[in-house]
Image (cartoon, rainbow, N blue to C red; front, top):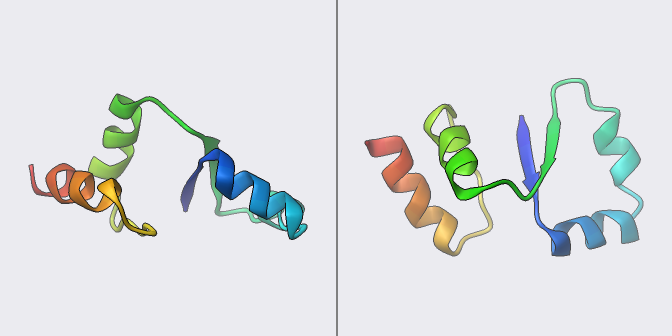
Length: 66
């Protein structure tokens, strides 16, 4: 699992004490925000994309389709 975390997500993870639990997960790689090109590369090579909505849904459609 690749988990790209933006600042509001990091704030909530810290607030709820979940950062250590995530760091302990062997099959999870966490990234801070990455460049758009890197993010598109990650999505193009993903078997599945999970998102909370917004523009990522549109970008995932194009990344996975083309």
